Image 1 (tube, rainbow, N blue to C red):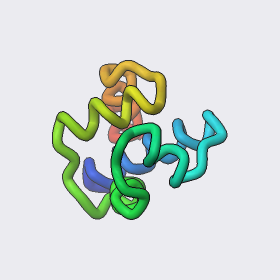
Image 2: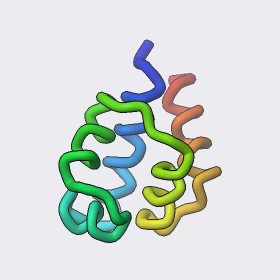
Image 3: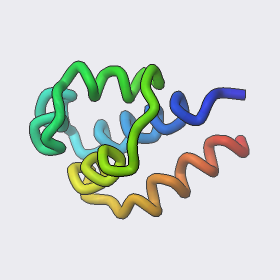
Length: 76
């Protein structure tokens, strides 16, 4: 079973790609550095609730829906 950080990163990457955003454009929109976005998407970091909220806003998605996707991925 994958770690929650890895699953969260997968969900963020999928949603970013659905919006057609590069990591750079997404990072700018979220107000964080591109290398941090890369680390998040690779599941290498634990994301604070504040950063998760910034990511959700940049993804134009409620944070609750992102967590729902994470939960669904964890069950599959």
